[in-house]
Image 1 (tube, rainbow, N blue to C red):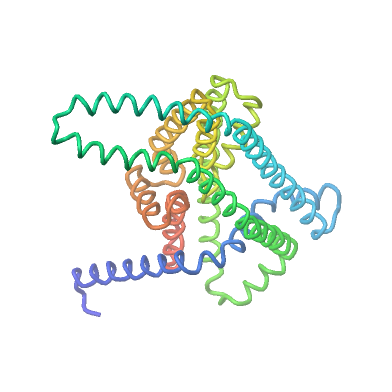
Image 2 (cartoon, rainbow, N blue to C red; image 1 turned 90 degrees about the vertical axis):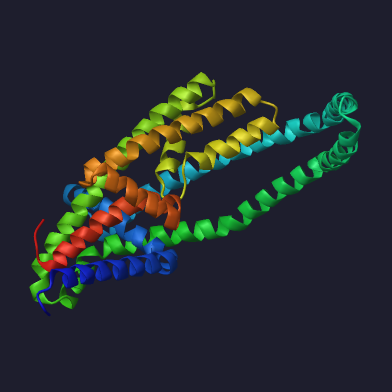
Length: 355
């Protein structure tokens, strides 16, 4: 290859572009199929200290230690999901109790609105009255159909949620079972992987693995700090709004916010909508304000905290988060900085350079 700086620069840009395209294709089409198993690898690595502790302290077999750790994790996850389901059922019950009262008040509200609009129409110039009356008739027809549309909308949400439950349970079952198998067979799995890799790559892979592990730990620290801040905001907001079980619900919503695909809006926005439909406008408005505050604080702090923990400049972390969000949504926004640092570690490992 000729010693041409411009040519080498263009080749590097081309390699980087091809790598990004390949990464996008992999995340877009391959990740949904492999996500339970990738999560299982991460969970098995996170449970490894506990598995080793049980082996050393109580002299348990590795398979039994792994089984106990996965059972505890499963129980915690089931408790979290059960609490969310209970709260959703409670709010839905309140809505169903108050819905007839709300609907019964719609005719009187429509009559008052119609009288006010009539007085407003009479005050308009004659050419505009016909146009306004036609528009008003269309709006009244849509308003008359609003209860049926609301019922159909709520029924559609319930049906979609019911149809999604089997997929969620299958995903969780596959992830947890894979976590057990990976954790129980971790030594044999690592030994098999070492045999597949050429010996000259062992040192580089160890260095890259250590860097990726350190990156993952720092990323978890950043997410844990963000989750603690979100928990504090939620606790303060729930106490101000006089919500029962404020601490417990704040912890649940904060955990949901830390999940890649979800966020506080997954809980707070439907909750606000249910509260509004139930007639509790104070709670509905308060939950929306709380969601806006949490979103604002997170958008300000997350680039700086993630950048500091992962060794990225805040601007680069913000760019990675924005690109990840545009490409893959909320999950991409959370995982993109981690992928950027992990990719750098893999690149350094391939080049044989310690970082």
